[in-house]
Image (cartoon, rainbow, N blue to C red; front, side, top):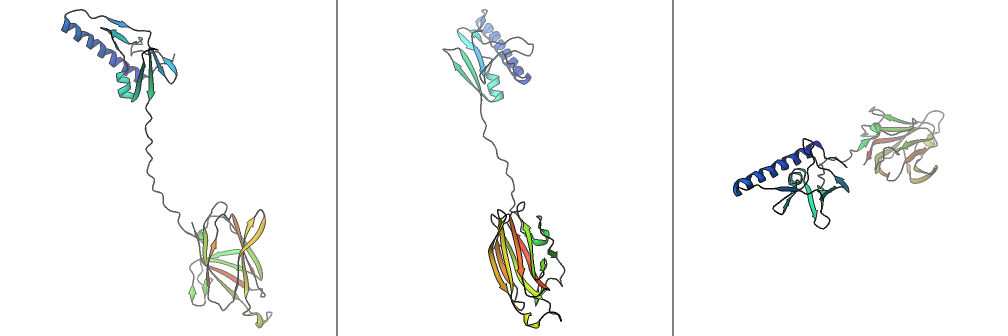
Length: 254
C-alpha cells in the first residue's frame, strides 16, 4: 500500500475532525446518540494504486456512514490538492485524479541575431585572409572602409568555416589593388583579377560566384548567399604577384 505525503495526511486529519464536529452537532440537535459506521469496503485508488489513508496520528481513515449517508474524508484533499474525486458505486471505489494544469509558457524576450562583422566573426578563417581595421589597408580610391579582410598573391585562397556559426549571407565590397614594380610589366597594371567563391560539398569545391574586377574599378558591392553552407572558399587569380583582394566592410547577416 502507498501512503499519502505528510501534507496530504494533514488534510485528511482535518476532514476527520470535521466529521466529528458534524456528529457532535447532530447529537445536540436530536438529543440522540449518532452512530457512525466505518465502511472499510470502499477502496481509494490513485494512479492505479490502492491507497491506505491515515491521519496525523497514524490511525487508518476510512469512509464513515451516518444515517445511511456515507461521508468520504476526501473533500479537503480535492479542494487543497486540486484533484478530481470520482466515485463508482457498483465497485465501491473512489478514484483520485490530478487535474492537469495548462502550462504557462514563460515569455522570453528573444532578440533577433545581430549582424556580425568579418573581424568579429566567431568561426574559423584561414590565416591567408588577413583581418584588419587599419584605415590605410582599407582605403580604396575615395572609399574608406572600417573593417574587412585582405587576400594577397597572384593565386590565393582562404576558407571560412560556417559549420558552427551559420549565417544567411555575407555582404561586402570587393576591390583589387596591384603593385607594379620593375619586375612586373606595366601592361598588366589594369588587367582584371578573377574573384571566385566556392562552397565545399562532400569535400569538393563547387563555384557559385565569380567576377572579374579591374584595379581601376570602384569597389563592387556583393551579397553572397550562405544559406545551408558549412564552408566557403574565397579565391583570386591575377597575373601580378603583388595583388590584393580587399573585402571592405564585410558583414555576416543572420
